[in-house]
Structures are given as C-alpha cells and as structure tokens.
Image (cartoon, rainbow, N blue to C red; front, side):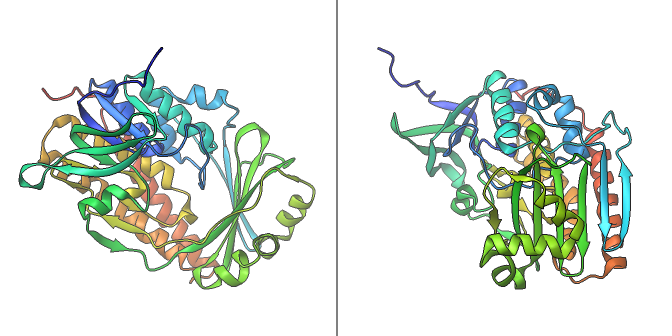
Length: 390
C-alpha cells in the first residue's frame, strides 16, 4: 500500500498559488536548480475569472519558455489582428512581427494554468493542489522561515523555506499575514460580465468603446469566443449585475448593434460570469524571507486585459531576484516591477474611469500602447536563464 507523498523538511522556495504567476515563478526557479514546493487550494485545471488575453510581452515569454506549441496544440488560435471600434470609427491593427512574436493569443485559464503548472512539475517543482496555507512561520528578526500547510491527506505540515512567495491573488493571504503595505490604490474600476459563444466568425480580437461603456470579443480555445462588457463602477449594480442576463445583453447592444446581432446568431457555451470590480493596488512585495507576485502584489482593472502578461513578466523578474539569494535583489525586484508598472497602472485607472470622450480614449490607448512597447523591450533584454546562487 502506498501512503501520502512525503514532503521534504525544507525547500529553497515555497510558493502559495499555482496559477499564472506562481506556476511561472516555480518553473523558472526549478529550471535553474532550485528545490521548489508549490501549493494551491484549488484543483489542477480549475477555471477562474479572467480576461484571457496574453499581450506581446507574455507571448514573448511563453515562446522562449518553450510553451507556445502546447498552448497552440490545446486549440488556442493565433490572433493576428485586433480592431478598435470607437463609436462610428474603426481602427484595424495587424500584429506585425517584433522580437520573434507575430501573433497574440487568449487561452482559457483551464488551458494556460495547467500548462504552466505541468511545466513547473516537469522542471522538478513539487506541485500540490487542494493544499492551503495555514500560517507563516517567523524566525529571528521576524524573517519568514516557512509555513504551516493544510493538506487534506497528510494533515497539518510544517515546512521550512528559504523564501515564501505569495502568488495567491488579489486577496492574498500571504500579503495579509506579512502586513504588506499598499502604497498605490486605483481611484476607478469597472464591472465586467462575459460569456463564451460558439459560432462567431474569427475576426481577431475586437474592442468596442462608447461613452460610458465598452465591450470586447476575444477568440479562445476550440473555436469559441469570449464576449465581455464593461461598465463604470457607478453603474455596476443598476446596469449589469442586478439582472446579469438582461444587463449583459443590453450593454452589448449599447456598445454595438452589429455585435449584438452577431450574438443573436451564435450559441452560448457558458453561463454569464460577472465580476463587480475592485480598486487596483500596488503593494510592498518583498521583505525578509517573503515576496509577492502577480495580483497579490500588483493588481489593476481588467479593462485593459493586461493582467496575465504582467503576471508572467513579474514571475521572471522575481525568479531572477530569488536566484541571486539576497534581500537587496528582492528590493530591486520590486523597483524593476514598479518601473514597468506605474504607467500601465495609471493609464488603466484613467480608462476605467469612463470619464473620456472618443478623442480622449484614443489618446489613452496610444499611451497604453507606448507603455506596453516599453515593457516588451524590457522583457526582450532580459537574459532568459541564470544559475541558482550557492
């Protein structure tokens, strides 16, 4: 008879959360020789609310990590064109080759998160699902030295770790337990509702903007499209989430009569999923024996669909810092992250305000594009692999 898989007494890194940020960080650490344990309270391959879109920076990383073939093999279509609809004006942008990337993609989280977790496991990381964080353990000088885990099979487990990384989302337990200070808070946020549809023609990603509302269509796995609507926070309860079905279709019609008619000829492949929105934040994301990555440390409104890309970016920056093995490297991780994030955070907050006319939203999108290009150039300059510190 085989018993529960044993834990080691100590790991180089314990990562709480096995989604985009956590699994990517684990994969990069493990590929460089670190002994990594990753725990996630949810099951492998479970779904989650997401914008799905991976921008050029994220595709660049997935390419150099060798994961794009698996993502494509899972039925994820390449996105080679994006179209912006500004009321009566249409702007079409073809995705041109840059830094070896000639398409974007928008995999379902059931696909992307699983592939990242499996890549981490293949690299040697120990991935444990359905295991949650009970509490952090402190040593001398309040340094985090490990954690108590809740494993439904093995029971409470005490783990020692060189660093504990919180990749456990916007409402991070790790952030709360270390008392991570929030030093930037978004002033605005949007409510979002989305549904998957079969039967829509693939026209690349499409974004619709009118005063007071926006919508989007993103091609995702197996011929389906994710169709979403966004409204200002002041209108969330009354316009969408009070009656999510009626509010969703009304918001689609308000954005584009053409899009609404397309939906009438398509087949819903899911329920309508809603997110009431939340203010963005930037938190202190490193300290003695701990770090935060992904939404745990930096979250902005999903209206600009840049969360996954930032999570992959920050995983790479953090992994490089952890491998250097000192507190100063962790401090530089946060400095580097913030340098790449401040403009994205600010322009996203202004877009989420919905306090713009058509000329202003086009100007904001130009600012967003410039910030994204800077991010891609920064990622392209990163040397992909370094060795673990002795």
